[in-house]
Image 1 (cartoon, rainbow, N blue to C red):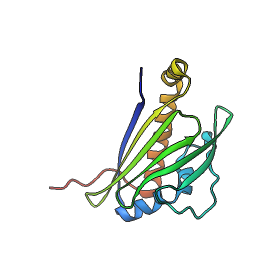
Image 2: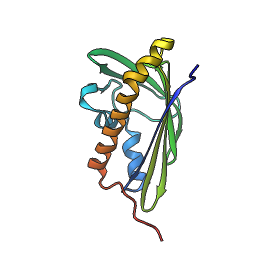
Image 3: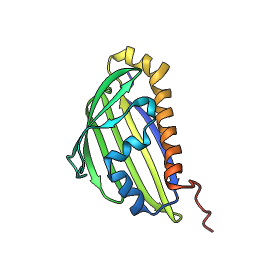
Image 4: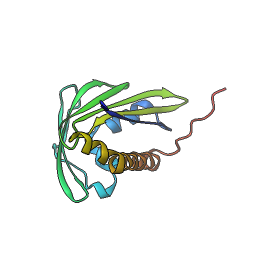
Length: 159
């Protein structure tokens, strides 16, 4: 039995750590990084005080089906990492670690998502046929939007 799936993405951002972290500390910016076809909205009103224990509510659509989603910030370590976990929504498990490291005059960002779908073997089949590819598309969209918002993503060689 598969305990969970893992999706990992790394991206170097040509901006200082403090600037990148400030952007990601505003949960409403997540809508800016999510493809339009998801119709993603943050329902929790501004300002959202990011800290361990913060509850954030969202709404999205998956193939036309409306899905409410709630996550809690499990860990908040400014200028280093934060972790959000799903409380309710489309996954049986959603554990997303965001790491930030100052590197080569910019910021190295790493997303590691551990997730599992509900419904046992049916969920595993849907993952293989559809969900994995769509999550990869969402994170690829996110990568491109970060380039548009922050600029180049190739670090300068340090010699």
